[in-house]
Each structure stands twice: as C-alpha cells, then as structure tokens.
Image (cartoon, rainbow, N blue to C red; front, side, top):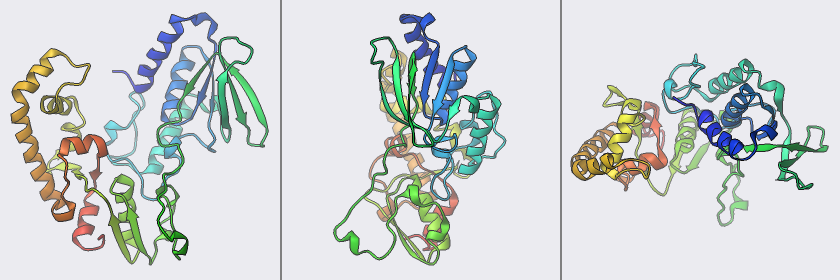
Length: 329
C-alpha cells in the first residue's frame, strides 16, 4: 500500500527520470501541512536536499488552527500515516491531530529543513535561463530573499485560500459580530448570544453545536439539506466498513457506473447489478432518515451516494439530539 506522498513521489520521480535526474539536487516545497511533510520525508530519504516554506508559525497546515470544535469525522484507522500509528482515539479533535502531525515531523527530522513564518511571494522559472525555479520569500523579519531550486513542489492544500465571505444589504448596520468559520476560535464568542450559522457542511454543523451548547439560541440557515451519515449504521456497523472501503467503492461503481480507470468487469457489473444496488441504497437512506430524523426541511433532495461523495458529513449523535431538543433550530 502506498501512502499519498509515495504516489505523488512516483509522479515526481517519473518527471525526474524523463529529464535529467542527476541534475536535480535541491527541491523547494511550499506548504508544511500533511502533504508537504510527507513529500519532504520521501524526498529526504532518497537523498534530495529539501527546504520547506510555510507562512504559519508551526507545521500542520489547517490542523494547526481552525474553528472551535473542529476535528476528524472518521475513525483513527482512516486518518494516520501508514507507518506511524496514531495514539489518539477515534474521531479525534483538531488539537490531537495537530500534535500527531507535529510528532511525525519531529520523528523524521523535517523541522530542521523547514522555514516557518516565511511567506512565498512568487514562484517563477529561473531568470538566467537555466533549468529550475526561483522562489521569492518574505522572512519573519520582513526581508525578502530569493532561493533557487532544481524543482519545486506546491503543497499548499485546498483550504488555504481567502475565506469565502457572504455579503448582504445593510450589513454595516448589524450590531453583532459577523464572522467566517475560520475566525470562530473560541466558544466565548457565542456565550449568551443568539447565533445564526449559514451553511450545512461539516464546519456549519460543528459550530451550530458549539453555539447551541453555550449560546442562548443556535439557528442553522441553509439552502440545501444534506444527508447525515452516522458513525455506526443502525447503531451497529462502523461507517468505514461500508462507505470508506474497497467494498463501498465497489457498491458505488455497481450503482453509479465505473470510474474511467476501472475495467470492463465493473462496467458489466453495473449493467447487471445497478437496479439491485439502487434498492439497497434506498434502504440505507431509510435507515439514515430514521437515525437523523430527516424529514420536512431536513430531508435532502439528492440521493445519498451523490450527496455523500460531494458533501460527506459523518455526524456525532450530539447534533441530532440538539435538533430534537430544540437547541438548534
């Protein structure tokens, strides 16, 4: 089994050997999150000289700091480095994940090659015409430096862009606080207050729960309801055995059709088994609807499979209980 960094490295190495591997010695890596750390470790073990850059004061990427109550929504076995078993329990909190990621970096001596509090301002091909890349960075002291690398790997992740803020008419007249989820860093923000959370993704659910626990009222405002997935299906079967496994992927392929890279056998199975699997997923939807009280405005409009692989939400029982109790409206 290959970890993500090994798969990435094979692609990188393919590029190395299709050009001139002997000329590639120094590699720049932008981002010191999970991807950046794994790439750095793999390349370091193969003899390359690596330098990581990250504008944050510590490694970890989005796990270094996030909204109050954030954490993983899957079991531990689905969220650990293959050769570095995690000591935290299932459905760990964000701070526990960050500690685990930091210990991974320490174990593999990645911190010594990492430049923290350093922002990469520009990446361009070497101006002298030689093969390679020039990175312009701003150091912790505010000075700008230029670094030249034979190769550059971008590992900034998909959640590192500017927060997507909504705006509405006369918002400047609102007397309360108007925050993006990334700024919800303390439960004291909601203490004794009426809180409206816009959205129905994982961060919205987590913040609505937290606000419902400490605030006077928590209201979830959303355009489309999504299927909640229980940690234990029917209270018995861990969700990872069904939807986060090869068996689960086979079921989806038999139901929705083969992925482009899948073979003829899967395509034939889809033609034969699709009606049966479709019925099985309708039963699953009925179970989830019962477990999460999906009815009325909470009833999703799209089928479960399409919704799960686009907006996957594995809920803890707290959210459903709070909705039933009226603590979340």
